[in-house]
Amino acid sequence: MFQRSMGSYSPNIKSERDTYSNCSFFGARDIPINIDANEIKKLIDIFFQAREEFKNVIKRRLTDSQIKEEENREIKRTNIELKNKINNISQDYYKNVIRCRIPYFNEIKDYLGDSENENENERYIYISETINESLIAYKKEFPEFDKALDYLIKKSIELIEVKFGDLSISEKNMIKIIIAYMYYYCDLGENYEDKTK
Image 1 (cartoon, rainbow, N blue to C red):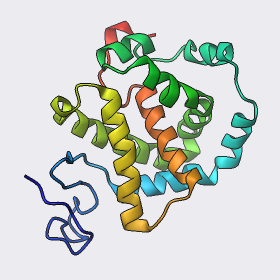
Image 2 (image 1 turned 135 degrees about the vertical axis):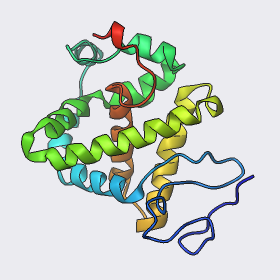
Image 3 (image 1 turned 90 degrees about the horizontal axis):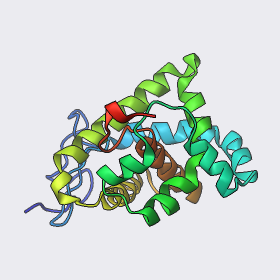
């Protein structure tokens, strides 16, 4: 049984020199998902600075047919319906948490794909790989992957706020967008590489 961490002075949190000092959650009901608060906060700040560009996307509210077109764009990833099935993501969760954030994804993809943003892309890869490794390790704790993503969003916000103070609503929303993006582009969850679109 784990003991809930009470900040940087807790015996459960190691010193700042320890690479795991910002990474885990402790509690009887918590799963130790590796989340590096420093790296996620940096990534959020980077995207938050570019939010004016993202806001322009939201202003042009996409219709369902336009979102469907975005879903069907040629990208190298597992077909989203198949991905949702193998990860046990409910249709309601996909529609209300992942799909509704698709309008942001091209801007994030373009930003991370820009050669001038190589460091940010490396940070993104580090974060997504670290989180996915933990989600794989604790897969049995989350028979439905939508619960894993919900847990990940809430715990990311909680950990960052403990370390850096309150986040704005826009910053919290950016966390949701980033995690939705990670799932949609197959950086989180199981994938079938031989059945890509």
